Length: 413
Image 1 (cartoon, rainbow, N blue to C red):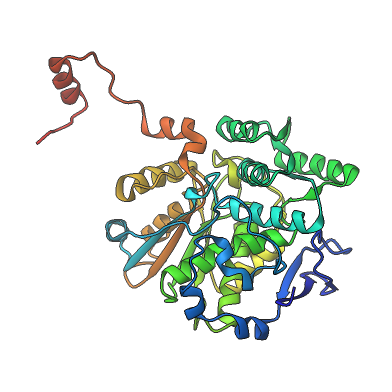
Image 2 (cartoon, one colour):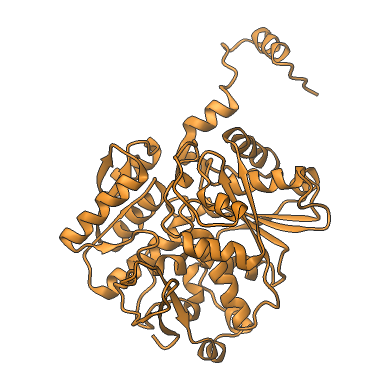
């Protein structure tokens, strides 16, 4: 790869050749993919990018760690819509607000970006089988993207994973192992199985290429904003891989001169599972936490990408905000009512965090904000129904309809 120099350990600084099956350093640290920005600047301009017909994450190939001969993965991943939302901005008291709906990816979450990258690198490595552990979205994204590419998958999920996500896995033909335990226990079993059978490893914070896939959400946001940098970008945080990727993408664009400054990040976690935000707030290291939230996709008590995530928040001068499950579900309804965007609980946690920061006066009328919705609400309809309630149910009778409207205080006309 002419655009990539090497992988560099974020702990000890040792460099490693950027081979397709690259994992962690011997010291246990995760690697960061280091690019030759001079070469990239010589190959990519804003004008060249704007002229491309490709409308997927692969439009940014010069900024991705793939060989020139590597074909794009079959499913259309990326180029999700970025909506400006003036009604919601006014309601929250912001100058301008945009919502990036990444639930419109093929398997309905941002994790498709990482899984598409994993499939591309597995192909380069000549692998036939990919495996991972996941709370749900990484699993379904891997199963779908691998199925489209003709690769076999073994997926390990904690038994609490929502049935909608497990149904996706089974439909995509994955071999699914539901682990009776926490995400940490699920991860450990997947690690042992991958080591035993030599499967390609798609686990977050083990495979350094996953963040490189996730960073494409940042590349898209900035291109869709015509390279005008917002003050803040808000995103939900679990294992830390997504916010680390978001920051990497922004730094890449700054390094090649496509943007002239960097935004601050907003790290939103659930109150019931916020080890990374707690570390920032306390000014120290992170330590494990129970997984006590309905936002299953970010219920990660032992985050695997803590080093990169904490570095991203601190380098950006960002904000951390923890939200209750009630605030998360209120944000789900708010996004639906004002924007027509249906996000799952973990997917709307970033927006819940923006709302809470506005109410606390920490951001406000002079600020521009992008909130990333990381997953579609159809992945977890049980919690959405619980939050929003059941529909009015009556026979086909106008008098009963009028009575129901009166009972529910619905005024028509």
